Amino acid sequence: MGIRATPGAIPQALERLTKRKAWKALEAHYARVRRLHLRELFVEDPKRGERMTAEAAGIFIDYSKNRITGETVKLLIQLAEESGLRSQIDAMFRGDKINFTEKRSVLHVALRAPNGTSILVDGENVVPQVHAVLDKMTEFSGRVRNGEWKGHTGKRIRYVINIGIGGSDLGPVMAYEALKHYSDRAMTFRFVSNIDGTDFAEAVRDLDAAETLFIVSSKTFTTLETMTNAHSARAWSLAGLGGDEKSVAKHFVAVSTNAAEVAKFGIDTANMFGFWDWVGGRYSMDSAIGLSTMLAIGPENFRAMLEGFHQMDEHFRTVPFEQNLPVLMGLLGIWYNDFFGAQTVAVLPYEQYLKRFPAYLQQLTMESNGKHVTIDGTDVDYPTGPIYWGEPGTNGQHSFYQLIHQGTRLIPCDFIAFAQPLIPIGRHHDMLLANVFAQTEALAFGTTPEQVNAEGTPDWLVPHRVLEGNHPSNTILAARLTPKILGALVALYEHSVFTQGAIWLINSFDQWGVELGKVLAQRIIPELESETGYSLGHDSSTDNLIRRYRNLKTTS
Ligand code: F6P
Image 1: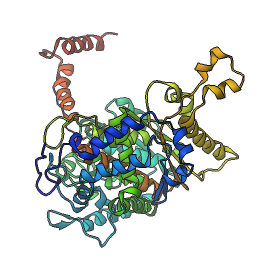
Image 2: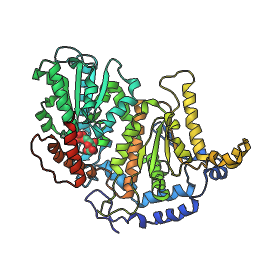
Image 3: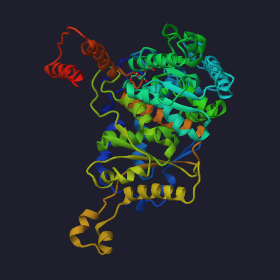
Image 4: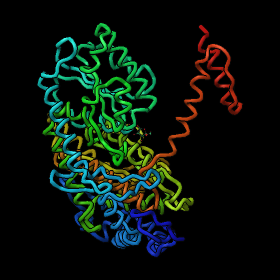
């Protein structure tokens, strides 16, 4: 089936994915190789562990412990080529409106484009605007960090609270945690996202309003959770500062694309840091949405992070697919998702500072590729975005790894590790890394009945102790977790998501699925709050739950 052309954006007249030559060839190839064991593959090709690797922007990937042969990689790359991946990449970097359901360009890559380069949106070069905002952030961060920016009572700012949700929270909190080692420890950073009042109450309970700065981060500045929390923050701040409305200017700044709503809230737009509709929420941590990151780690480190992003962008844009990290990772994801039927991907950072990385990736991957309609508006006939989940190592090993090793599901894993610890203590780091290598080895090769027998295991116990192995993993290794490496790592996943969306023929940049719940919540709020009469009219379950809630909430 032909694909409806989208003006200036999507390559035209692509065949339906499952009808492509490479797809058909992959199906036949899968039937041949699906039972091959990694043990055999490594015996047949002893250099595989050196050959099936790629490196860029300080990040090395070993993808040899995947259930693939050289032929698999060749066919997957052929699939990428038949899917017009190269021209889709070019379309994104060129500023075409590839987010066609929202008629927007997708230009997070412009957020890290060096000064002096040019990326056009509707004929206008956006790179100078990006750098103007970066300069404004730099100036502001400098003043807050050196104490020049004073609160309403003349005290310096010691506490920064970012209020936002989704992309306006997950990126900032992940980056703050990831780069805490580089942060100014004289300042405390907290992140409020949930509309559950406990989130806000716990964040401020031990703080002095005179020393607290709120960053209200919201692309739209209309999101229910963020605006509710922002109003509570305003009330809390005013209460702590004697009710003087003038204090708001010293204790609230905004990050948004919506100047009108920012002004309506009462924040001086001089204290607003802008970004643009061509930055998707989940792709915004390196825009002004990263203001809390810059305040924490300083402008120089923030710019180093942008440099890491940019290096990976250039790698993705220019390097042949055979050596292209995001393309290879994206294709391997398609191999397991669409041919092996794997439903999830585990992301396992062996770096405590990356503890929020899996949560961050969940929005990036699942809000992007959780789609069942192709760009021509028809249903897909293949699975799209898998479920991402994970925990930092080694904690997961004592929790869910059992299921990965001996359960009935195939769970491809991304192991992320660094050669140097940021805080060296005794033997900890060698032990941590030993666990990375041990786990990927155990997953791939397992233990055979013969090996278990040879250990003197009684026959009845052997089947319980056998690990079949053949569980695929990527190992992502870098020297050290720096701001630059974090940028490169995030860009690696961003572009891997792009690669998959481009091949699956879906729009990775809208998120209509989250809208209905928002609309229904707006209808239900007055039904819960009404003191007097209220009329319901939902289904019998929802009506009954609402009635029970109303009764229970007044029961002592
Ligand atoms: O959950 C939907 C969503 O639109 C996300 O895509 C976005 O990151 C989040 O809400 C927050 O939106 P905003 O930054 O406009 O408050």
